[in-house]
Amino acid sequence: MLLTKIEEIRRILMSLNCEFADVRFTTADSSSIVLSNDEIENMGSGISQAGSIRIFDKGRWSFTSFNDFSGFEKFARAGMENIGYMSPDAAKGLMSALPLKMNKVTDVQIDFTSVGIDEKYQMLCRYNRILKNHEKIERTSVLYRDVHSDYCYLNTEGSEITYDKYFCGVAFTSVAKNGTDIQPFHESIAGYGGFELVNNQDSAAENVIKTAVEMLSAEQVKGGEYDVILDQRMAGVFIHEAFGHLSEADFVCNNDRMKSVMVLGKKFAPEFFNVIDDGNIENTTGYIPADDEGILPEKTYLIKDGKLNARLHSRETANMMKENVTGNGRAISAGAKPIVRMTNTYIENGQNTKEELFENVKDGIYAVNFHGGQTNLEMFTFSSAYGYEIKDGKIGKLLKNVVLTGNVFETLKNIKMLANDREMYGGLGGCGKMGQSPLPVAMGGPHVLIEKVLIGGNQ
Image (tube, one colour):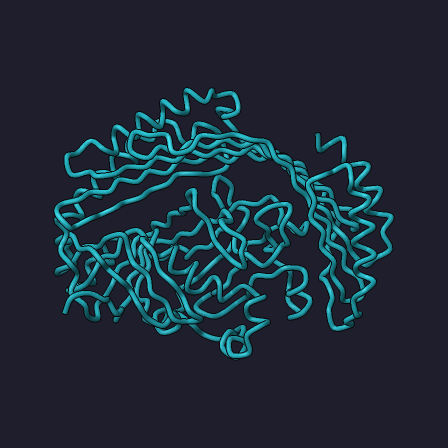
């Protein structure tokens, strides 16, 4: 359907008298099933379409979203008319780029659009039986979601990007209870691909129920200052939430205090520490063939050799800060405005083994997985899903309510060792910013040893 519209929309777009304009439009076919305990909480499918046109001229923007492709010329003319009512701002500009021609098709082994709803439902029932297979499990939940979308991007520079996108995922939750002690555990698996991503995930469901039940007997962590080892997922969440958002250029542009802190070339961490954002990594939830401004994603070293090396940009912020565009102008949908967003953000591998990290901890905490948290500028509070005590380099008893707090810049300075076992994680969730959520992203890193981390808990 989209291919029949491209020629007409390109003709209208190129007729506009402006410095720059672009249009995005998609059609999507999606389905979802949610089981809560043994009941179907939700089951549905649908077809949707959405689009938008942005126009930039003399420092002025207009943005129009629509879901009626046949009315595109009307929306384009209205956008030009609207921009005429705004005052020109010579200080604003956009970074230009060479025309980009691309047609990307997702690699799919099993097309989920050819899998019947009953087969999807029976798969969830099987997972649900696993999740509730213990006397101490009080509640379970299983969620399945897929979406097949045709995406098209055109701009007045001559770019034409089409993307046949398949995204599929499943999420598991078991809630264990013993008296007044309630311990939930959650896991999700998702990515760009077909039904093969979610089928035969019995072992993941088994791990969810096992962890939820084991947490009932975990000890409450004793609060204090510890040497802490973060697992790969916790390391990824830490760098995404505590540092990645600080590296988004629109945040820096609008915060005078952070401008004085986030100075390129400033040393933040040891020389062996590197942080990267890279939308080119296929088979991750943060992969993008191009961003929503027609820019190829780059492997951007945010921190290189311990120093702030770059930040993430849209066309507008790159022009504003006179820095290179990075391909990080992203939107939650074709009907939303692109803003500066991360893709795949991770800590680069170090030179040590995981075992060597543990050998260097006499009395510490191993923080595993991620449960929740918040950031406020450079201050953070993160809860790991669970943890273990470390005694003389050995993993000890299971711990719960492991909450890490601190200042990201002080914490980066206290990083002592990195393992060489980086992993990436995305899942069915995503990142939220300025009302656009959940945007698919991935994060990760190797095991990380950090000294002097404040852990909340019982005294």
